[in-house]
Image 1: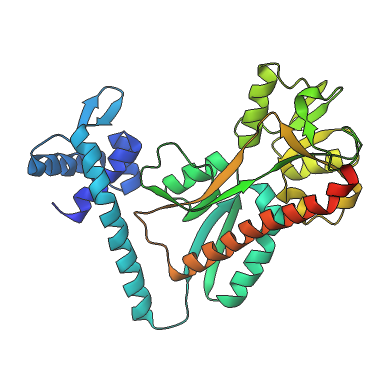
Image 2 (image 1 turned 45 degrees about the vertical axis):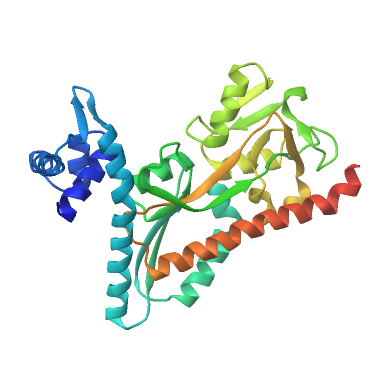
Length: 314
């Protein structure tokens, strides 16, 4: 078996479809099918069950995937590091990555400034998006890495670190008492709520709670525009549920009413996701390390903020 056959196998395993796998591998579908068939012949067992709705890995295929995935990742790392050593110059290249809007608003600008000062030869391309969409872009090869939703089936994806945040309800009016009072969304009366669509991790949870009759807003606005949502609520009695990081670095934070959400249970847990079959450059690892530091700092700053206001609401 050769490396090309294994890479084709991995693409089919991830996509569960030969046509989509061929698109990702930049090869025509018949050629990819022949190479996978040749690999199966060499192994002496089918790796996939073919059906009209796609393909499903066999037990042998699942085990083969488990064994080869670390090897492919290691080979990619070796190639990347040797290439960088051969250049023997400043760290360079291009990084393409993505982040959710609240994280971008909170800390990303500062991290980027540090990074570009340290690595001026590296071209950085950053996009914003929903956490689930960012994960799909990493899986599809459009992004080198992203702070995205961690899928149940990681496949060839891996997480460099997890980012876990508390959620807060914010408004320009005292809708739930003094600021920093823990808030139970299901008990709030006359709640005017701005929420993202179900494509968003927070929006999906809130829409489910509303559909089940647990959270009962008096008025509801669905808006997939974080900055516009923030501008609406900061000068009105409308509210939005957001990660705590969204308010940590805002100069107008003191004019907001901020309520940590105590119930229902809402989770905001993301991961710094990349495809382990693709090597991350030296610059990539450096940027990821800076992002992890920023993630940890968010949690520290939020705890400090809660402690500073604990006496005021006790």
